Amino acid sequence: VQDIFAQDPLVRVDQMGALFIAQHHTPVFDSFMAVPAFLSDPRWLVLVAAAAATAAALAGDVTLAITAAPILGGADGLVFGLQARVLRFAPHVPPSEIVHGFAGFPSVTLAAATAAYGMACYAVAANTRSWRLQTLSAVVTLYVILLVGLGTLYDGQLLSAAIGGFAVGGCWLAICVTGSLTYDRLRSLDSPQINTSRQEQK
Image (cartoon, rainbow, N blue to C red; front, top):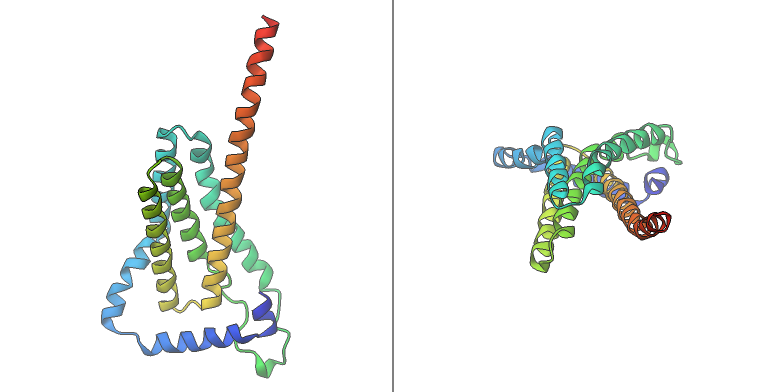
Protein backbone atom coordinates (compact mmCIF):
# COMPACT_ATOMS: atom_id res chain seq x y z
CA VAL A 1 0.00 0.00 0.00
CA GLN A 2 2.82 2.36 0.89
CA ASP A 3 4.64 1.68 -2.38
CA ILE A 4 1.54 2.34 -4.48
CA PHE A 5 0.59 5.37 -2.42
CA ALA A 6 4.07 6.88 -2.90
CA GLN A 7 4.47 5.46 -6.44
CA ASP A 8 7.76 3.89 -5.41
CA PRO A 9 9.81 1.67 -7.78
CA LEU A 10 7.47 -1.29 -7.25
CA VAL A 11 4.88 0.31 -9.53
CA ARG A 12 7.53 0.53 -12.24
CA VAL A 13 8.17 -3.18 -11.82
CA ASP A 14 4.42 -3.74 -12.15
CA GLN A 15 4.42 -1.81 -15.40
CA MET A 16 7.44 -3.59 -16.86
CA GLY A 17 6.11 -7.01 -15.81
CA ALA A 18 2.69 -6.37 -17.34
CA LEU A 19 4.28 -5.15 -20.56
CA PHE A 20 6.60 -8.16 -20.74
CA ILE A 21 3.76 -10.65 -20.23
CA ALA A 22 1.53 -8.86 -22.74
CA GLN A 23 4.27 -9.16 -25.36
CA HIS A 24 4.65 -12.91 -24.80
CA HIS A 25 1.06 -14.10 -25.06
CA THR A 26 0.99 -17.15 -27.32
CA PRO A 27 -1.58 -19.90 -28.00
CA VAL A 28 0.70 -22.40 -26.23
CA PHE A 29 0.86 -20.29 -23.09
CA ASP A 30 -2.88 -19.64 -23.30
CA SER A 31 -3.50 -23.39 -23.25
CA PHE A 32 -1.06 -23.97 -20.38
CA MET A 33 -2.63 -21.22 -18.28
CA ALA A 34 -5.81 -23.26 -18.16
CA VAL A 35 -4.08 -25.23 -15.39
CA PRO A 36 -3.64 -22.33 -12.92
CA ALA A 37 -7.11 -21.10 -13.87
CA PHE A 38 -8.53 -24.47 -12.80
CA LEU A 39 -6.43 -24.54 -9.61
CA SER A 40 -7.76 -21.11 -8.61
CA ASP A 41 -11.39 -21.75 -9.52
CA PRO A 42 -13.57 -20.89 -6.48
CA ARG A 43 -15.48 -24.18 -6.72
CA TRP A 44 -12.24 -26.15 -6.72
CA LEU A 45 -10.92 -24.16 -3.74
CA VAL A 46 -14.10 -24.99 -1.82
CA LEU A 47 -13.49 -28.68 -2.58
CA VAL A 48 -9.88 -28.36 -1.37
CA ALA A 49 -11.04 -26.75 1.87
CA ALA A 50 -13.74 -29.40 2.32
CA ALA A 51 -11.21 -32.19 1.74
CA ALA A 52 -8.82 -30.64 4.27
CA ALA A 53 -11.64 -30.32 6.81
CA THR A 54 -12.72 -33.93 6.25
CA ALA A 55 -9.17 -35.20 6.61
CA ALA A 56 -8.70 -33.20 9.81
CA ALA A 57 -11.97 -34.50 11.25
CA LEU A 58 -11.03 -38.11 10.46
CA ALA A 59 -7.67 -37.53 12.15
CA GLY A 60 -9.41 -36.24 15.27
CA ASP A 61 -8.62 -32.56 14.75
CA VAL A 62 -12.17 -31.27 15.12
CA THR A 63 -11.08 -27.67 15.71
CA LEU A 64 -9.32 -27.43 12.35
CA ALA A 65 -12.27 -29.09 10.64
CA ILE A 66 -14.63 -26.47 12.06
CA THR A 67 -12.20 -23.66 11.23
CA ALA A 68 -11.92 -24.61 7.54
CA ALA A 69 -14.93 -22.61 6.37
CA PRO A 70 -13.98 -19.41 8.25
CA ILE A 71 -10.42 -19.66 6.92
CA LEU A 72 -11.51 -19.68 3.27
CA GLY A 73 -14.52 -17.40 3.63
CA GLY A 74 -12.65 -15.01 5.91
CA ALA A 75 -9.81 -14.62 3.42
CA ASP A 76 -12.27 -13.61 0.69
CA GLY A 77 -14.15 -11.25 2.98
CA LEU A 78 -10.95 -9.67 4.24
CA VAL A 79 -9.68 -8.99 0.73
CA PHE A 80 -12.95 -7.49 -0.45
CA GLY A 81 -12.97 -5.27 2.64
CA LEU A 82 -9.39 -4.15 2.00
CA GLN A 83 -10.16 -3.46 -1.65
CA ALA A 84 -13.08 -1.26 -0.68
CA ARG A 85 -10.86 0.53 1.81
CA VAL A 86 -7.78 1.18 -0.34
CA LEU A 87 -9.82 2.33 -3.33
CA ARG A 88 -10.50 5.47 -1.29
CA PHE A 89 -6.80 6.28 -1.36
CA ALA A 90 -5.15 8.18 -4.17
CA PRO A 91 -1.42 8.06 -4.91
CA HIS A 92 0.31 11.00 -3.26
CA VAL A 93 2.01 12.27 -6.42
CA PRO A 94 1.04 14.66 -9.23
CA PRO A 95 -1.46 13.10 -11.67
CA SER A 96 1.12 13.20 -14.47
CA GLU A 97 3.43 10.90 -12.45
CA ILE A 98 0.85 8.22 -11.55
CA VAL A 99 1.70 4.80 -12.98
CA HIS A 100 -1.31 2.97 -11.50
CA GLY A 101 -3.57 3.14 -8.49
CA PHE A 102 -5.17 0.59 -6.17
CA ALA A 103 -7.55 -1.09 -8.63
CA GLY A 104 -7.56 -4.86 -8.04
CA PHE A 105 -5.31 -4.61 -4.97
CA PRO A 106 -4.94 -7.04 -3.24
CA SER A 107 -5.64 -10.08 -5.40
CA VAL A 108 -8.74 -12.01 -4.33
CA THR A 109 -7.67 -15.08 -6.31
CA LEU A 110 -4.24 -15.39 -4.72
CA ALA A 111 -5.53 -14.71 -1.21
CA ALA A 112 -8.16 -17.46 -1.51
CA ALA A 113 -5.69 -19.90 -3.08
CA THR A 114 -3.09 -19.23 -0.36
CA ALA A 115 -5.67 -19.81 2.38
CA ALA A 116 -7.14 -22.97 0.83
CA TYR A 117 -3.91 -24.72 -0.16
CA GLY A 118 -2.14 -23.54 2.96
CA MET A 119 -4.89 -25.05 5.09
CA ALA A 120 -4.63 -28.35 3.20
CA CYS A 121 -0.86 -28.32 3.70
CA TYR A 122 -1.24 -27.72 7.42
CA ALA A 123 -3.84 -30.48 7.71
CA VAL A 124 -1.39 -32.93 6.16
CA ALA A 125 1.65 -31.74 8.11
CA ALA A 126 -0.14 -31.65 11.47
CA ASN A 127 -1.48 -35.18 11.20
CA THR A 128 1.62 -37.05 10.11
CA ARG A 129 4.99 -37.68 11.75
CA SER A 130 6.80 -38.27 8.47
CA TRP A 131 9.10 -35.32 7.82
CA ARG A 132 9.30 -36.36 4.19
CA LEU A 133 5.54 -36.07 3.78
CA GLN A 134 5.52 -32.78 5.68
CA THR A 135 8.26 -31.36 3.46
CA LEU A 136 6.60 -32.66 0.30
CA SER A 137 3.26 -31.08 1.27
CA ALA A 138 4.95 -27.72 1.89
CA VAL A 139 6.87 -27.82 -1.41
CA VAL A 140 3.79 -28.83 -3.41
CA THR A 141 1.72 -26.10 -1.75
CA LEU A 142 4.28 -23.40 -2.52
CA TYR A 143 4.55 -24.65 -6.10
CA VAL A 144 0.77 -24.57 -6.61
CA ILE A 145 0.45 -21.09 -5.09
CA LEU A 146 3.30 -19.86 -7.29
CA LEU A 147 1.60 -21.38 -10.33
CA VAL A 148 -1.66 -19.66 -9.43
CA GLY A 149 0.23 -16.40 -9.00
CA LEU A 150 1.79 -16.73 -12.44
CA GLY A 151 -1.67 -17.41 -13.84
CA THR A 152 -3.04 -14.20 -12.32
CA LEU A 153 -0.11 -12.23 -13.75
CA TYR A 154 -0.72 -13.77 -17.17
CA ASP A 155 -4.37 -12.71 -16.96
CA GLY A 156 -3.35 -9.10 -16.35
CA GLN A 157 -3.09 -8.92 -12.56
CA LEU A 158 -0.31 -6.65 -11.33
CA LEU A 159 2.61 -8.06 -9.36
CA SER A 160 1.89 -5.78 -6.38
CA ALA A 161 -1.70 -7.06 -6.25
CA ALA A 162 -0.48 -10.67 -6.35
CA ILE A 163 2.01 -10.01 -3.54
CA GLY A 164 -0.72 -8.30 -1.53
CA GLY A 165 -3.10 -11.22 -2.01
CA PHE A 166 -0.44 -13.72 -0.95
CA ALA A 167 0.34 -11.65 2.15
CA VAL A 168 -3.31 -11.29 3.16
CA GLY A 169 -4.12 -14.97 2.61
CA GLY A 170 -0.97 -16.13 4.39
CA CYS A 171 -1.41 -13.83 7.38
CA TRP A 172 -5.09 -14.74 7.75
CA LEU A 173 -4.24 -18.44 7.58
CA ALA A 174 -1.52 -18.00 10.24
CA ILE A 175 -3.94 -16.17 12.53
CA CYS A 176 -6.64 -18.84 12.18
CA VAL A 177 -4.23 -21.76 12.66
CA THR A 178 -2.65 -20.07 15.69
CA GLY A 179 -6.10 -19.50 17.14
CA SER A 180 -7.13 -23.13 16.66
CA LEU A 181 -3.88 -24.38 18.21
CA THR A 182 -4.26 -22.03 21.17
CA TYR A 183 -7.84 -23.15 21.71
CA ASP A 184 -6.84 -26.82 21.64
CA ARG A 185 -4.01 -26.28 24.12
CA LEU A 186 -6.17 -24.26 26.51
CA ARG A 187 -8.87 -26.91 26.34
CA SER A 188 -6.34 -29.66 27.07
CA LEU A 189 -5.11 -27.69 30.10
CA ASP A 190 -8.65 -27.18 31.40
CA SER A 191 -9.69 -30.81 30.98
CA PRO A 192 -7.64 -32.23 33.91
CA GLN A 193 -8.96 -29.51 36.22
CA ILE A 194 -12.55 -30.24 35.24
CA ASN A 195 -12.07 -33.97 35.78
CA THR A 196 -10.43 -33.35 39.20
CA SER A 197 -13.26 -31.10 40.38
CA ARG A 198 -15.84 -33.66 39.32
CA GLN A 199 -14.04 -36.39 41.24
CA GLU A 200 -13.88 -34.20 44.34
CA GLN A 201 -17.62 -33.52 44.12
CA LYS A 202 -18.29 -37.25 43.94
